[in-house]
Length: 227
Image (cartoon, rainbow, N blue to C red; front, side, top):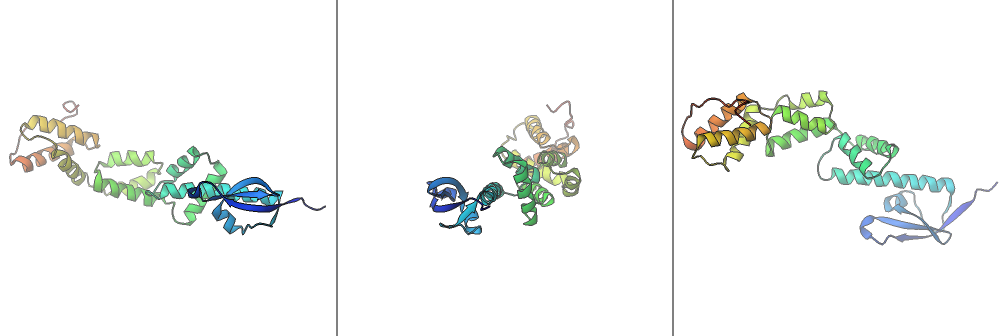
């Protein structure tokens, strides 16, 4: 028995040129739209006849391409963890099967590497928003990175250096007319960055001395004294 086929009678660009999609007309009527990359890959042209099975394959390829394009856009801003990409694609309405295929494809391309992502995240934080190992670990866990990878990546984080870098930025906004106020505000700031009290105490004293030339011998910041 002959398989019923429909003929492509027109391929027309969509109204939004930025969408990179075209409308497919079968037997004179609009049937569906496809990503232009799918059209090129499948060598679609007017006059070509398609069976229902071939149409299903085309629309499936289109769903994959749309999911992949969404992942590429998300990755274009900065590296992402696998969990971040999966969550983003789910929010965009892509199903689990499409997402799994896309993640596998990204891994083959070398674009899905949680260890590389964690390293990027650490270096970015160290350069622009220094924080403690503890807080860095918490951030990476929220990004869905495995504990073993996190431990390996953050083990060389220098708490003393990061605390000092963070303090120097904050200290520029603080008055040096009152040591107790300076101490409380800078200490609270460093505490929010995840540093422990020993590191905070040493950092505050060092920055104060550098800013004023005065070495204070005040009681150390404690958990109870630092709200």
